[in-house]
Image 1: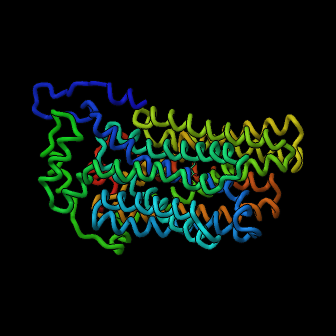
Image 2 (image 1 turned 30 degrees about the vertical axis):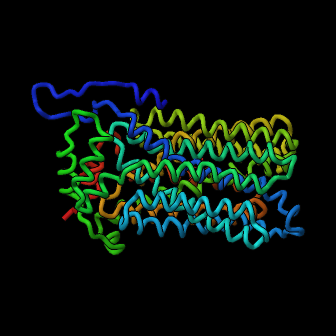
Image 3 (image 1 turned 90 degrees about the horizontal axis):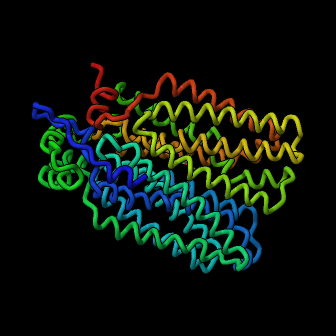
Length: 472
Ligand code: BGC
């Protein structure tokens, strides 16, 4: 799909007016390259969240007796670190810029994954998982933020969603690495391999410039001009874009500003999108499904296969989302995808309701297929669209802080679901738990329908004027 973007060479349609329609401008290689490099942050996000399930099985080979609580710490502290990392990088990315934050994030990734790989004691590993979490949380917001500010509006959806694609690939690679290294119990290598994309992210980012939006809002017009010349087509009205950004962007902002009624509206939308993305169960399906299916009677290798199959569906449907997101828009994918998730969850729930917690052969097939439909529906909608929308809907001067609030909400909800899902299964049964997730998906659909704006094709400045401008 990269090729599709790069080679599409559409001429500008100025007609006899001097105005350039930037929606028709060709998209340069430089900007696609920028998106690809920074999306390594997404790959690390996916890999580091995914790899732990396999590594946990072998920690005892180095540390002797590892309790369930220790395992929960190794898994869960990443989520806590991610919330902290998102908070810190929101402040920092408004203050010192997006590029230094991504560089710093890459450096923290390198330290964290190498620290985890070489942990002499279990407590070091636990601490390093928190450090990796800081980087994962920071990358999860800084990368979409940066790409969205560099990308031309016509392909912004696709380029920002490269990050989600890399993320899904990271999860899949983690599953495969875990599988490949399990016979040698090489848990250190499982963690340590992430140093490769982390170093590439750091080196790649050194070749990239600061976001033009950040430069303009910090009065660095000449630098902004030279970046825009590089990432826009030859006919682009660079000065016009700078004037448009500076007309809106004021440099100073505080968290208090997020409470102003006009801004609060979009802050709430971002937070609810974040919470819905998690409480509709994606990570329970991605990480607990194999355990659940195993308990439901599927053999070990069948559960593993279902897992890899699910990962492939996740990647494949994200590719389709990237192709569609700038054509059909965000809302269609978001609402359609979430309806698909609800339907699939109800089918899983009904399957458990009919068969009880142990599934027969046919029921197991229905459950596995429905979980794939669920994952695919997430991957074409709520997965990429959440991260994209929170990089688009906020005014430039508070974009970093607002994105970090939504990102913290996302990691917080992720954590709550992770620690409560198994209890939920035990308390209200598998059928009850999946009905609940289906019901929450329906509420999400209703909310998205009523409140989430369409941003397709608009410049960030147009979005700011139309969606988040003071109403007074
Ligand atoms: C979510 C993650 C999830 C991933 C699955 C992301 O958009 O934020 O929590 O693990 O999608 O592909």
